[in-house]
Image (cartoon, rainbow, N blue to C red; front, side, top):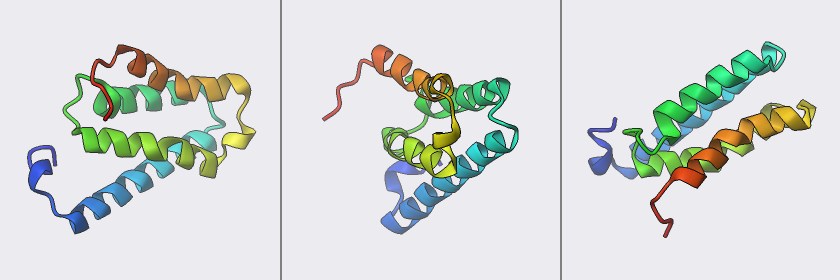
Length: 107
């Protein structure tokens, strides 16, 4: 996907974005099913941070931007209301850390 990203057409891009949304939603549902266990939350966030959000990630900026757009939306749909304040902070902490380290300017 990374190799073909520059030449991808709009229809395939929309399908890929929908796939990202579905995978994220199902991942959050799996963590919810596990009772929002701290270890599972950490594992999911570590995976997402390393593979998508990290400035060192090979993911295109469009993928990163889309992920940032949908993350809280999907977390809310799955059940953010039942999380404690500490758990909600745990979910947004990686985003804050990466934002603090990112040198690219948003335009």
